[in-house]
View (tube, rainbow, N blue to C red):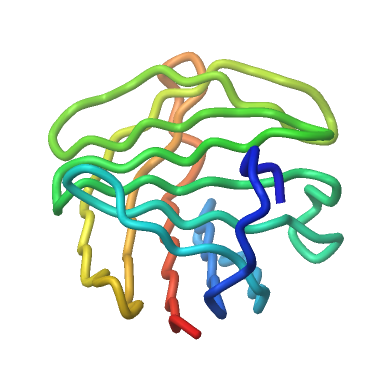
Length: 146
């Protein structure tokens, strides 16, 4: 983990990501160990990406504050930061193994059921590039504190 200290993995994370574009779904599931930590007003979930997600050698940190704000920050072999805020569109830098781009993120829903013992987090948002719709996205994280 790139947490800057020697924190031990303390959570089992089940991530399911569904991307819908042109009426076709693409789905990725990842079960991994990571860190769940309380922060001022919310929680952070940190985990290492894998070959399954296409972002191996990268670490992702998801920060969630209530039901109106979340961010996904990826660092390592690829880096990106997505900002999700209910009712607002954010332009974010997004890097993939194939190249980087600026994307528009419009958040439809943040359902935060996280506690110090784990829980679930649902994020629903759309992505556009140059104001052209690309996809609907849904990320569901289930976190079990160990």
